[in-house]
Length: 497
Image (cartoon, rainbow, N blue to C red):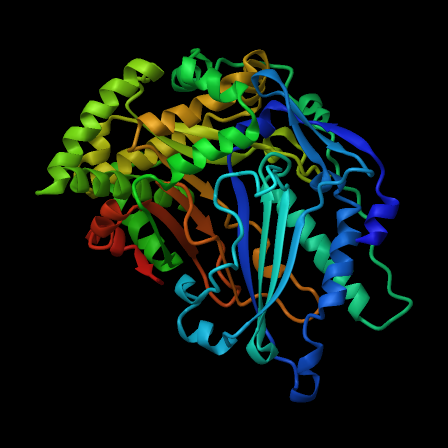
């Protein structure tokens, strides 16, 4: 830490509208590292000093993670790095009386985690001191040095998933060099970019109007959204954390094999035009969305308290609709998309936020209907159409309009309050999570924290020894109880825990 404090330069990094668009959430992962070293070398596994020193060396290349978040009117903001008043990331080290073999035997179930392993929730909130930390690290060493749980989180205010992985990979690279015992070893020079003008300069010269759904959701002024945009990030975080905990969230991990996906794709072929090939993401996003909406419908129409809940939600929706100017787009699935390749900036080391939601519109009736090959094909085809429609001119117009209405980043937050059936899908399967190597082997398991936001689905990568995808799904406990017995979902997805 002393090395970092002595060498960091004071600076201000201006944030952009794409940063505030994702700002309500964190990016947390838990890496499981097993100690497979020989008996006489087990004490050398992932030494704390090397991890800590290499972390702060990496932080020097990502100084904004040690800055203070400053937000002005309508959500415009910046990160101020002041070497005399640093906001250092939370960095914790602990030892727990849990053996790695116990975690392995339980398929890495969250129930065996130490209670204080994770120090943040899915929403970016301030700590006890009232300050928002932009990064959180917890190195939890397991009994007999049998392994390590590495919890890492970064705020979406300053990086997206690609930026998160860039930091983690660089940290591991510095640690490998420090542990290799070769004085001639050097870490290859890399450049990481934080200048938000990179995205602006990469925008297409052409413009194409945004979709009706996007225009209605983001650019029709709503009182509650404007209010959320004007308040401080700390207060907004407290409000959104309360919203995220409503409905008693419950999460599970599932596995979907490539073989089952191919079988599913074939079963839909009679209902999809021959010139369209549905991607794996199209199939998963559509089925997961329909499964969640079906689960919510069953929960709200069940006997007993479900009937009461349904009536309360109806009244609440009416009241909130008056207050928040409820949109009438039908059902929306938010498919979160990285736009780097569409802007041709994949290989320049840009770490700022570069994700935009693709809005997939369906009637609520279609989403609530029984899941058949025909109904699934209809929804999957709409996902494919939304993805194909998301080109450079569309993105450029969307970003331009966001800049004219900077408070519009809060519009989806209001939408989630007033639409309990909305679904978010993010595909993280290309994140190099299983390639992280601090010099002692790669992780055998990587997962998000136990709970995400309600109706949030993460498509995760699998260990290199497997094929397919791991799916992290969070919804209300009542909806989840229906999902866990939904044959359409369980024919594709195998419950892990």
